[in-house]
Image 1 (cartoon, rainbow, N blue to C red):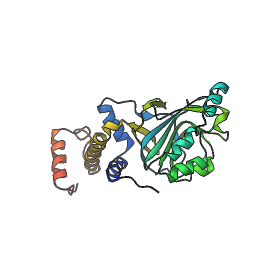
Image 2 (image 1 turned 90 degrees about the vertical axis):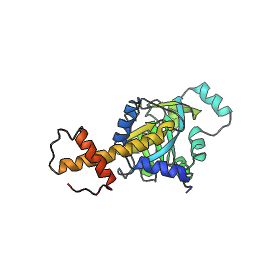
Image 3 (image 1 turned 30 degrees about the horizontal axis):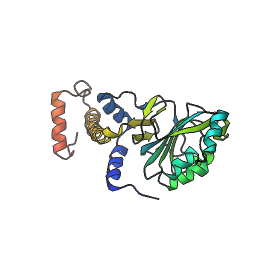
Image 4 (image 1 turned 60 degrees about the vertical axis):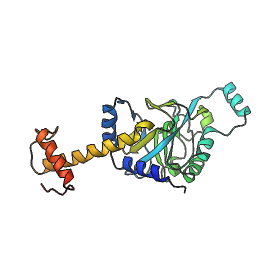
Length: 245
């Protein structure tokens, strides 16, 4: 399978090391409170799996005969096939299907090509097919539902790599997505490095505060930390985090 380049590998690794809860806190502080994709559930077999990737977006509309005939007359591949074929290492397919769960936008065969090309996740405001196979693939999968029916039963792909709406969140091509058992959060691409660094710092601080509480400290003055505790934390960092409580 293709590998991430060195720069992406470093960024993805930093984001994988922090929780989506911490990422939300950082984004909220930067003025982006609505970044958690709501209403989707993970269906992959390993719920400890962490997803980090970059968005490629697809938009589907309700099936309409004349629209479908026009698109098919163009002779272009289906959107899901195109996204699978053009995927690169770290790609997450983000699908705006308008919440439609009466048809699956993709099944295990297309998902297999996507995975082999380097895709790491499917985030679908709609449904997928072939859950029994897809949930055991090396893909992180978040959906609103599942359905055995093919896409043409209810939906048709109309746009590729444009801004979309997914679970109430605006997602732009190239945005970073981080997912775990709780769900998926979206990080605007230009903020990814800053968010990763601030989230790591926040979790280091919270680790220190948890240690103080586990040692018997009162929560007052520790969470949130007062100036004295913040100073202790800075000394703990400088000392290589070796302080015992």
